[in-house]
Amino acid sequence: MSAQAGTVPRRGIRVDSRLRATARSEWIKFRSVRSGPFALAATALIVVVGAWLLGDSNRGSYLAASPAGKAAFDPVFTVLQAIELAQLFIGALGVITVTGEYTSGLIRGTFVATPQRAQVLAMKALVFAVVVWACCTAMSFAAFFLGQSVLSPAKHAGIGDPGVLTAVFGAGLYLTLIGLLGMFIGVVVRRTPAALALLFGLLVVLPIVFTQIHGKFSSNVGEYLPGNAGEEAFHLLHGGAYALGPWQGLGVLTAYVAVAAAAAFALIRRRDA
Amino acid sequence: MSRSLAAPGAGSAGHAAPAAYRRAGATLATEWIKLRSLRSMLVTPLLGAVASIGLADLASKNNAAGWTHLGAAQKAQFDPLAINFNFVIVGILLFGVLGALVVTNEYGSGLIRATFAATPQRGLILAAKAVLAGLLSFALAVVIVFTAFFTGQAIISGAHAPHVSLGDHGVLGHLMGTVYYMTAAGLIGLFTGVLVRSAAAAITSMFGLLLVLPLLADKIKPDAVTRHTVPYLPLNLGDEMLHHHPGLSPGTAVAGLAAWVLVLAAAAAFSLRGRDA
Image 1 (cartoon, each protein chain N blue to C red):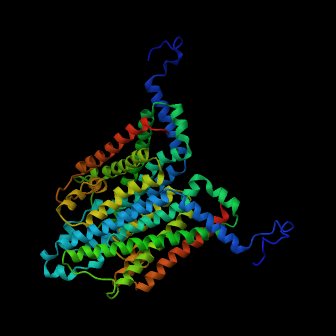
Image 2: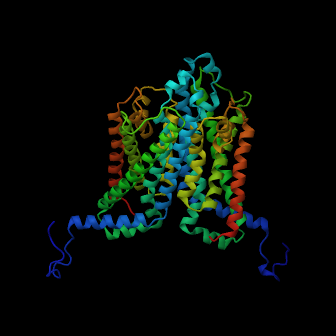
Image 3: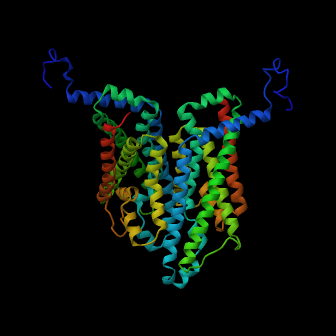
């Protein structure tokens, strides 16, 4: 921390410059493997093309729907729904950002270069979150505008309508949190297949299991599953017994991410690489 | 074919190629050793079987528990076989992922290069893997399907709700159809694994293709294009085969699943010949 570098050469470097260097090395690792651009391109393709397909097909079904069906029609969620498929790619990207390094053995080089493992993980998560958030928010806006233009003359939403801007930003935040959840699960599990199975199990298998079990308990708890809660972020209409709003839903998902992050930070410091 | 390597004068013919059936047997033995020595190939099927059977029993118990309180219309719709086998929609994921792991594990560790050096006949290796993955999927499916059936129906009959037995009309066909569907999912996973060569891509593809994409595509209103594509996704074919919706005939659904396996097998065989290991 002091400037007497000449006399105590092994005192170490300043924290902020180390963090900057770590962030740079994490960025180089992120952009130099093929999976990053591939997963982001697949997500963009699915979300934007999905918005067009879903908007196009729902325009006709909306006009033919009953008054009750028209009232329950959510023009924002309808066109952003393809995120349910795209989240697999973003989640997988989060997982392999970590497990890929364990598989190739690069993680040992990383930890030799920066023995402050918590700082490595923090910078890795930060770089990942910034890149994924920027891309996913951009594609969420693109999907929204494309989908709404295809939806009209059926019920559609303008970006200035109440709650719409929150929902469109919420979609980008949702995907970012899913990616981070995958990343922290990857740190805990360290193996690609197991981490993917755990993440996808939480996101897509558990909600289906809960719909197969009837009863008050199951339907109430089901709303608090990470995927179901987080998806409220890009709903305009909120149904269900507890009716989580967009920010409460994102809050529940963030709590899952925080638990995974706590486990990841605790384990990465104690275990072998 | 009948050339014997054990002939006394084998010294001069030492470089003759082994008989095809011997090579096939040796390849099968190699693949079997690799398969059974992977810990994930023991743990994953066990956990998956326990989870599938548990889910089938849980759904049976949960649905049959309220039988006496159901209205007449709901009683008429009560389908003990469908309730028992609702888990299949997520159960096939286990098979897709297992099939993919058979091959992507080998690409991940680099063992595939040694495999191809030992047996340059890559098509033969693919065939051996397909035979073993198919048998493994079939055996696992039989265990899961029949255990889930007997325990699930016992639970339903214990709750004094209507239940079916193995001899009832269409029941055995339903169970064997489910086994076929699960085995096909295992092979779809295997060949997808060969095509994409990485565990991450293969597992993501399985969850996307077998579960999420069909659920999403079902929400799109049928039009000229989707009417002729969406019903042919594996999940919808499996559904058509097992439940008699007005749509594709069960025979078409069976053939459709076979077509998925065969087309992916051809693509995998083709890509395996042309690409680096």
